[in-house]
Length: 91
Figure 1 (cartoon, rainbow, N blue to C red):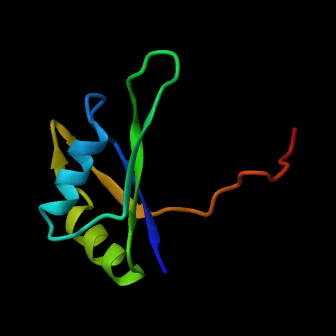
Figure 2: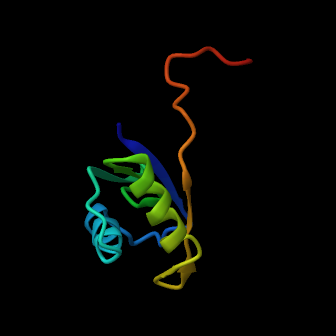
């Protein structure tokens, strides 16, 4: 079963490929990498998600990269919370 990681505090110039390369330097092979982009500007919103093949691999990478530097920013890496897509929240 796959596990998804939230990666925050990314430089605004960060691309999917940059994030994939960072994770590969740890010896990890991400299943999917996605930097969230602003629709209006086309620039990174400063966070993204990386999907790993196993939960154990995700925990190892989180430990290795949490607080690591990318550009001039220290990364925040944590297990992603479940998506709320399709749920109705308070208005």
